[in-house]
Amino acid sequence: MLWYKSWLETRFRVWFVLVIVLFTMVLVLRQVHHSLSHAAVENLLTSLTLYLSLIPVMLAGAGIKTQPLLRTTKGLHGSMYFTLSLPVSRLRLLATRGGLGMLETAGVFAALSCMAWFAFPVVRVHLSSSDLFAYWVTVSICVSAFYSLSVLLATFWDDLWQIWGSAIVILILRWLSTEVAVPSSLNIFRAMGAASPLFTHTFPWASMGISLGAAAILFFAAMRVVQTHDY
Image (cartoon, rainbow, N blue to C red):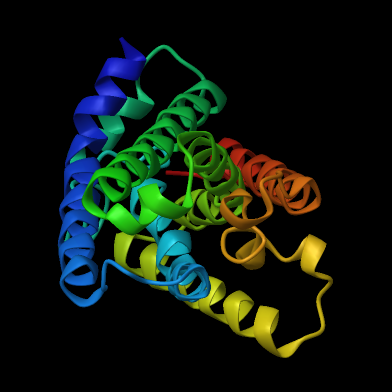
């Protein structure tokens, strides 16, 4: 019941992100030549890593809030008080919403991978379906840190501040990854681009581990905020 309630309250976010993904893919499809070289595909994917990192921001913002996406009125949405009055702990409520949001994020990336496979012949020429599956797993794990960051910010900021705050942090991290000498094995953005299974044919275990570790720390912090916050 709690999972179904969470889905009803977050499904608009999923459709909103899927529309953006579809629109972006149409733009890319109109500009990409079908005879792209392997190096060109690598450069294109590297340039899209920032876009991939921002997708979880839209799907992670529910927290224990139940208001519509990008609500403009001030104060708490009325249904949030109903949610807080349910006979479940805040810990379970956040864990359920967080788990569903992460599943939705993985689902969006799965849809994106399938669309890319069928829409771009160059993908089928240079890549195997197993490589694409490994890439989906890698991206889903690597963005978990950004997802948990957005979940944390959603516990004490409204939608607009949570989205902008998460985006600014991700932009700063993306800039630092290009300006600071970070070992490639520890660079999450590189793990979704040039060092992804699409080109190395192996999982970037170090980057994936760092992302999962950061996600766990951030999600634990979000739980502490939810448990102690006075709504």
